[in-house]
Structure formats: structure tokens, C-alpha cells
Image 1 (cartoon, rainbow, N blue to C red):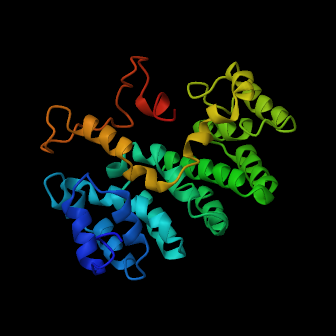
Image 2: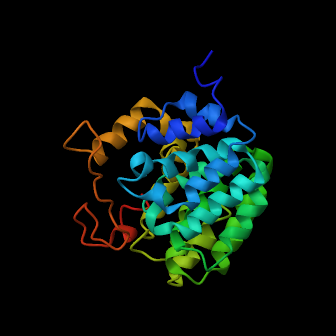
Length: 276
């Protein structure tokens, strides 16, 4: 039996915070199993002190919480995650594109209608909308009975949008279905100049179509949120966040969406490797 089973929920949450980055999956699972965990998790996400380096948990607690919320499988947890994505966009940074499609898709079939509503909201950050579209793509693979419905929804969204960058994001989702009926829609959008070719160009279309499933953009998000707590992931986060010390002292600065891309392309990060 896990040592966490006998702990009450509040001390369990405090244990997670005190461990900073080093939270094991068993602790995350135990927190998610508690019926009274949600208010404690909500408090962490809404309290600025938990987001700060040097604060409780050295700023890691909110990132652990957003990976626990999908395990709750409740509407209130989904709504909270969507609110945090809207209100804490700058703090989440690249986590928007790296993690949120996995997190949103993990809520499963019941989340589809709510996600459709959100991706239509043009007041949302463009990259949040792109992540929501990707999460719908992932759900369509996990629930084959909903594939045609979601594919139709994304194609209509693509046809209706006037934002060339968002159209570029959506074209990647549509091409991943390898549906020949969608190709004319995508090709016409290129011809009409409706797609940001800094994100995806027309010569990439055939390349995307020929990619095996495991190399399609959506595929990397078909995993459990618990992978965030794996030894491999924690080691990676420790390596990039504390590069000069094994002891957490100073987090590495995250790349801003409008910063030059570190790949050296000369483009802004959001127009280059961020989406990748």
C-alpha cells in the first residue's frame, strides 16, 4: 500500500508542493482519487504565490496541478483548466503548445462540446485555440465514433476563419486525417492566400500527407497526463530548468513567443518552432 493512502487530502497537497519538481506519479494519482481535492488544486492555480520562483514549491505546483486536473474527469476541472489557459497565458508560456492538447484530450468524450465552444472564441489567445483544435483531433482518434463529426467541425472552422495563422494551424490538423475530400479545401486556401506560409507552405502538404501516423503532429499528444510525473520527464525538466546545479536554485528563462527562435531561422519563436 502506498504511503500516501493514509494521508488526508490537505497534507497530501502540501506534500506535493513541498517536493517542488520531484513529484512522483503515485502521489499525483492519489491526489486525483480524492473527492475533496478540487478546492485545494483550484486554490493553487488561483494564488499567485504558487506561480513564483522562490515561492511555495519553487513555482512548480501549478504545473503539477494542470496535469492532475484531467485525471479528475469532471466538468469543473475542465472549466478551471480552460480558465487558467485564458488567464495565465503568459505564465504558461510554451506549456500551451507542449502540454495542453494532451491535458484537454484526456478529459475524453464528454469534453467535446465544451472544447468546440472554446475554439470558436476569437477572444482567446491564438495558440490556445490551436491547442484546443489539436485536442479535438486527438479525441477523434480516441473515440472513432466521433471522428467524422469532429473532422467536419474542424473543416468548417478552417473554411470560416479569416486568420491566416489559425488557418495554418487548422490545415495541419485536417491534413493529418489523410482524407482526399479535404485536400481541395486546403489547396484552395493556399491559392486564395488564406494560410500563413511562414507556419506551413503548400509544398509541405504532400509531405504531411505521407507522414506515418506516429509522426503526425497530433500523435505526440496521445498520452496520459501522468507522463509529466515520469522519471524521464522530471529529469528532463530538471536538466533544462536547473542546468548548473542538481539543487533547485534558479529556473532557466523560458522562450517568449515573440522572441527570436533559438533555431536561428530569424523568425519569431511563435512563427517557427513553437508550433512544432
